[in-house]
Image (cartoon, rainbow, N blue to C red):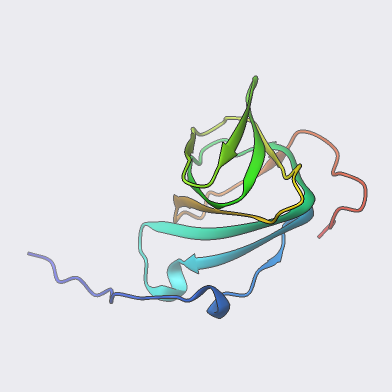
Length: 136
């Protein structure tokens, strides 16, 4: 049997500072678990959306997303479907599925997003960023 060279890890949210999400308004993202923690197969990211935050429509041609709402309520667009998701809801976005996020409430939103740990991660933006978006 092959020896497992990875070690367990616990990461507090404060230990993973969130940075602005590219082309979004009012959205930040932090990697909680990934290559730096020795995770070989997946990356767990924490997204924070302030009131009126928006991540414009985009897709990832070869990467699926598995997400869980932790706090708040937001509107999620998935291909031709628009859903309101709340704390406790789990979402699955298959590879190539166009998606976008909006916080239309006065409360902060937090969700986790798990993606494969791959060098093939690519984002195709499908709409212009919202006014006041971070353009990095």
